[in-house]
Amino acid sequence: MSRKLHEKEIKTGVTRRTFLKGCAMAAAALGLSDEVVPRLVEAATSPQRPPVVWLHFQECTGCTEALLRASHPDIGSLILDIISLDYHETVMAAAGHQAEEILSNTIEKYKGKFICVAEGAVPTRDGGIYCKIGGRTALEIIKDVAPKAAAVIAIGTCASFGGVQAASPNPTGAKGIGDVLGKSVINIPGCPPNPIAFLGTVLHLLTFKRPPEIDALGRPLFAYGRRNHDQCERRAHFDEGRFVEQFGDENHKKGYCLYKVGCKGPVTFANCPAVRFNDVSTWPVGAGHGCIGCTEPDFWDTCSPFYEHLPGVKMPGSGIVTDADTLGKKILGITAVAAGIHAAVGIGKNLLKGGQNKSK
Image (cartoon, rainbow, N blue to C red; front, side, top):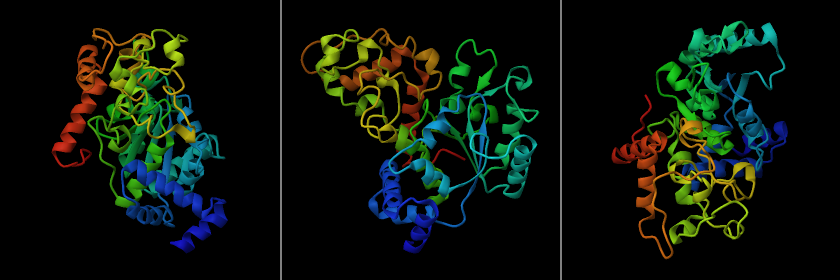
């Protein structure tokens, strides 16, 4: 293992210490013990790098940009060195017919062995004509490529659930990858998602030859198994009934809970408070802006208006609130945010069945 790491250090400039630190971070995110780190390193340094075909559809390329700009320990380089990124429209040198030839050759040469990563929603209305690449619609491409892959990962909320393209009235009939294919895929939602969620998923696939445990929405439990609300540094203020009434007031300056000004943390399943994005020391809620629920399906419709609190909830007064979790359940029920409900149900089923993987 040390020799492989030394060779990798010479080849990429990523030091052994940095590489090990990255694998340790992934292990921690996955909830694995330090004893598993050598197995992750062994899988990550294998000369048999899995080919990856990365497809772009209706999106802003923000997921790719976030990944490439990841830091500590340069997760972008780490991932690109772990996998063989054979096709990616944003970073590949080839273009036009040459690029499409590479795509065709890769999926045929590595049929059943490559990982398909899809970024962006797929339009389905009018035969899918609203997104075409190389003369083919996104709908044709994903239905051609995905069935030949060993695993399919939908990265970002657009690919996972449709994203802003699928917001009402959804003129192009945009859908997430799983809905288009009619089967379960690994969803890594977020706008954009934390690179650690993607790195952890890839390393889990390489190390254990199977996807990580997922919830009913196809999201890895290690990254999406808990609500932001339950991990938030402002949670104590929620329990005590201390809320920001409007942005810029004294309570806002004191760092009180942002629920009243629209924070959707109580219905959002993610690890944003625990695993900071790209090694930045804070996150939106920590910086004073409420969570908008971007890891949830249909969040543009169900979580908006973003600066209004979820309706129909009796606000806690002064003193300790003993039923904070019950209040969260009421929020889920009253707002009918299907994402939160389904995720909770999925997690419960996984736990009851001893963490049995739901994916087939």
